Amino acid sequence: MPDQPRTESVQVTVSRRRMTSRFAASPQMIIYFFIAIIALGTLLLLLPFASRGEGGTPFVVALFTATSAITVTGLVVEDTAFYWTRAGQVIIMGMIYFGGLGFMTIATFLLILIGQRVTLTQRLLMRENLMLDQFGNLVRLTVAIVLIATGIQLLGFIALLVYFYLFTYPLAEAIWQAAFHSVSAFNNAGFLAFNHPSGLLVFQTDKAVMGIIAALIFIGAISYLVIIDLVRIRRFSRFSLNAKLVLAATLLLTLMAFAGFFVLEFDNSETLGNLSLGDKIAVSVFQSISGRTAGFEIADMTAARDATNVLQTALMFIGGASASVAGGIKVNTLAVVVIALTAQIKQRNKTSAFGREVPDSQVNRSYLILFVSVAFVFLVVALLSITEEGTPMREIFFEAMSAFGTCGLSLGITPALSTYGQLIIIATMFIGKLGPLMIGLTMTQRSENDLYRYAQERVTIG
Image (cartoon, rainbow, N blue to C red; front, top):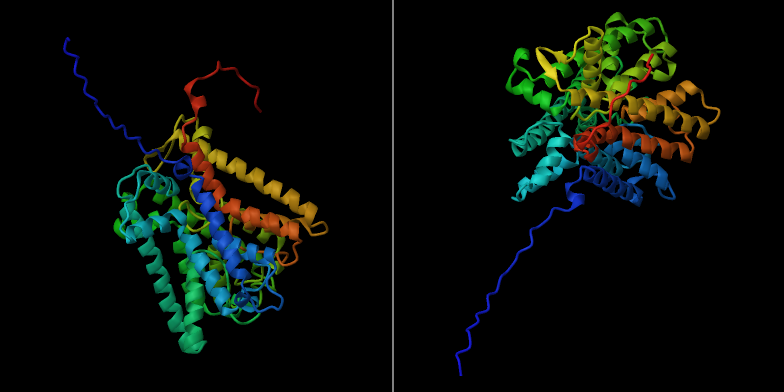
């Protein structure tokens, strides 16, 4: 019998490559986690120990407050100092701190603390969240952001603590007031916990308190990246183009706001008219810094002239710097739009500033953010004019712009909003915080439609 051929079995193990989930890789993860944190904050504020009122906190009030804190807006339907207990105020302060840093910054920092590896997906989201072009040093940058933000708030706390303890409060109360308002000021949140009805107005002639809070607001609104440039480089000529545009636009807008408020309210007895010249200047400086991004009110805006409120509305729409705690379309966006329009007027093909050219993709992104933001605000105004029928249009427009710019100033209609009006403002604060960012992130994703082009045809314009 012939020999049978020998057969050998070979076992092959094929390992499946791990695929990153679409959810984890999507920039929309930032939105999902912000919603989750708002939900958690709402549940905490619904607990009996969080509020002073009997019968518990209404759900919409808790949701409104949590959204306002997480988005660092400052609009409130109930007075923070008198409606919420100290425990409730601690919860609000924690949400402000978290909302100012942002989800990706804190998540990445926690991974570093527990010794976990930061994945490529997380680095990508962090890069897009900070609007950077490179991957390098993102982990170190995250640590620097958390340390710088916490350190500045700690310095603000010490400064306010010393002053409050020496001149205003006993030690325990001074510690609390200093902690809450250093966090609220740096994160441009506009929440107040002073235990007197006039709030910050009681310090209208106190230049020390105004100066400390204004400094915290200004630093928080120029973005962590610009702060790092200021600390490390210190020479304007060597700053990045982003830092140069932010600083130039911020200083210009602050000067315009100061001049406008000072001139328009100089003889208004209900705002500046009864103050000395030095106090008028101090209050105008404070409002020019706070009114654009933070919403702290050292003068009664409900008594301000219409022209002042129109100027204030425009400033709230602009907001602070990209990758900062502030909202609005951002001063970076405005600066790019202005220099792009200037280049077109001068018939230049490229947009440039400070000897550097701005990529066309960023110019297009700035135009899109501006257009979508204007359209969205007018939609909010239209909806509020329906739900808040009878409310003056100037108050509705001011409220909508404040919510979108996450500023927090109001002409007094926030507590009187209907339930539908409150829900509209809640959505506006959320979109105002994340909308411009998500437009930018979406435009960084390559679209399949870019793989081919149609034939060109001219359209009549103008």
